[in-house]
Amino acid sequence: MSEEPRVEMYTKENCSYCEKAKDLLDEKGVEYETYNVTGDEELFDEMVERADGRKTAPEVFVDDELVGGWDETSALERDGKLDEKLGLAVADGGETDVEHRKLIVSGSGIAGLTAAIYSARSNNDPLVLQGDEPGGQLTLTTDVENYPGFPDGISGPELINDMQEQAERFGAEVKTGIIEDVDDTSRPFRVELTNGDVYTTDALIAASGASARTLSIPGEDELMGYGVSTCATCDGAFFRDEEMIVIGGGDAAFEEATFLTKFAKKVYLVHRREEFRAEDYWQDRLQEKVDDGDIEIMKNTEVTEIRGSPEEGVDHVTLVSNPKGKPSQKLDDPETEESHFDVGAVFLAIGHTPNTGYLEDTAVELDEEGYIRTEGGKGGGQTKTDVPGIFGAGDVVDFHYQQAVTAAGMGCKAALDADDYLETAELGEASAVHEGAAASDD
Ligand code: NDP
Image (cartoon, rainbow, N blue to C red; front, side, top):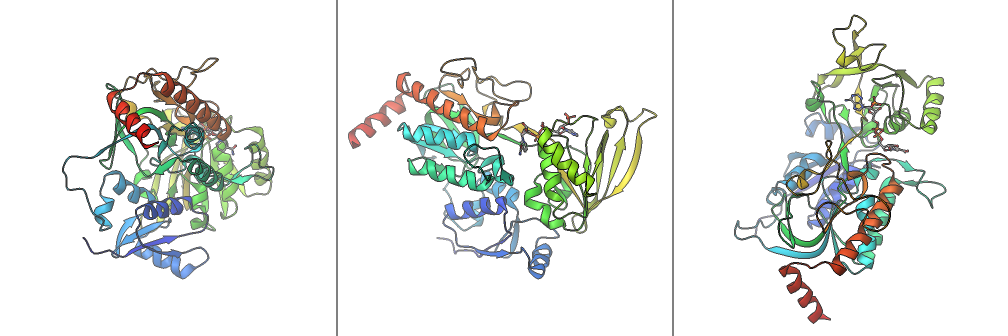
């Protein structure tokens, strides 16, 4: 057996990615030390130095070597390389064990966990694979004030933790794992994970949500984690007293801009058009901050380049503006103006892309943007896809409502539809063996 390496993690308070990284290491049974940098400037500086200038938490080190933040740590896990780095026993490359499950739920956001609660209570023994973003988007929000039943609001991570606990209480199993591929040509379905694990399953609920969109502009990738971020609640505090830009005109951008006024010298909301999508509630709250001088709105404006360095962070951005909107598409228009703008951090809040890559080779129908097309309509079976036994729920299906409570509702529907399928469908050979084994255990 390999010798145990020393694992260290810099964390901060209210850091959902730190919690995700801790959960991953806990699941692996690894011992690690944590250093909380919140309110400790010396420790923060130490983290930045050891992490090659990165100012985001978590930062994970193994034997004094920088692994990185949640993205890098989860990427290692996704590629099946984390166990080796952590000195854990690694599969010998022989035949992979294939485990059969009655129901797999991909995604551990609000849709997936609600599906897990209902499926567990229907004795369908769900295995929830957490995916790239354990807990989903709610773990990246601060207060959720519109989820029924919480008159004073509840924090997103707390709501998710409670739901996971509730699902586990009824027997759901929640594991780290990202599905790479689903083979729907045979029954049971074959489900391969990025870390090499393989399952077969009688039914699959796809509740894999959507991930933050990026702009694909120069400087964005290089400075991600060094002043460019898709999560204001995670990273805002690291850029205290800096001027910050939030890009977007929807609820997320308005919420993030409002939140960032706690830390920023000033927040600039940069939106490509004249009209906003954000609901009146957020527009009113943001206007209060504009009246106080904490936020300035830049309409009909886009960021086309982010300049800076990993060592020094973001220095300035290039802005283009045009009174007719969407200026980056009108660069030759005489009314388009370009300028440089000094800023310390850039937060992207420009919507999400559905996580459905693992379904691309199946017969599940996806729309042009990759959202799953489900049966919809009235009556039972609304979450069915084109493939009997595969169901869709939450943001991976719904590009319109995208609310926590609607995702929960769809998760519930998918669990009921899957239960109906599992009760009535003719399942494949492996399931019959599995059912037989289960029956003889009783
Ligand atoms: P939205 O799709 O609502 O808004 C995305 C914004 O980003 C739009 O204003 C869009 O501009 C802009 N955008 C998209 N692509 C680009 C680009 N390439 N360059 C510049 N700007 C771009 O996404 P949100 O994440 O804000 O919200 C998604 C859902 O989640 C909504 O249903 C929302 O209600 C909900 N939500 C609710 C919250 C709450 O109530 N607490 C908080 C956050 C989200 P344009 O308008 O021109 O298309």
